[in-house]
Length: 342
Image (cartoon, rainbow, N blue to C red; front, side):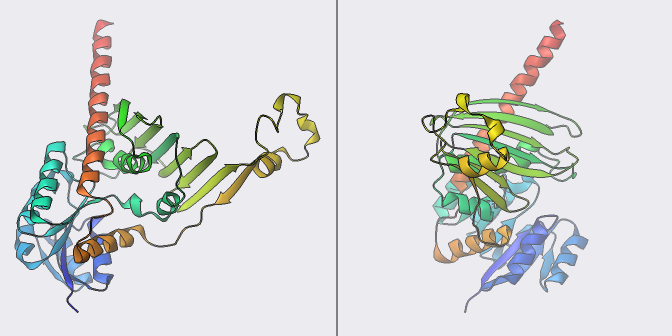
């Protein structure tokens, strides 16, 4: 059977995991890994019995597909080169640093008939996949994505580094256009925002509140989603999801709170989270999200399918992230102006 020849461009913290997964996938041949740091490239290549290079252009004519996991500032140029030469591309988030660059890559991939997939690993998280099957209609979404400062992705701020994961998930879940954005952010260590909060209002009435930080002591990746009759709590790190559903008893006609004597209820917590609210663990499959993401990419290349996270969806996330960054800049400028007045 003919194997799909692939290479990984950039084998640092994330790219080395791409190399590991590709080396394990049936029907795939990891032809090479590329990294500007020769020792790192050699180390990863020897681990998976493949070739290594320091210049990505050396593998363009050797592969049919690539995974790009280099700093964001290089995404566009490298992806463009591979697409131009007829190579399918998966590029890690954010797909590009600017909206115009993303649009150009999409146009090029369409012209060439190639797969362009944006690397949003949370789309393949078992809990997100399970929730999508529930046909949940959120009215309010709250996201917290916090991590210590890693000194990686220093070329971008926390919005494009971390928050963009949640932006993509929210856009996918709401299926609605953005109506209004309010955002604030501050620099702490880097010369770009390290902490940011955005409140996004959608045309369908849903509201999302997103907080991202890369200067936190403890990591956290949690999401809460509220609908009219249920509430979902997600912990990405634990791959865990809980759904709280309203009992038929929980109606104004069936439950008169003003006349209740809570002293007669032996266990108030059990009453609330048993009789009134039903709490269930969301059933999900157990697998590695990155493996599922790369399997999906390979399948799309081999079967000429539209990727789960298309270039267009990668663009939408970048557009919203860009609007958030502009709002942060506007608020900072306003704040500085006020300080000058005082």
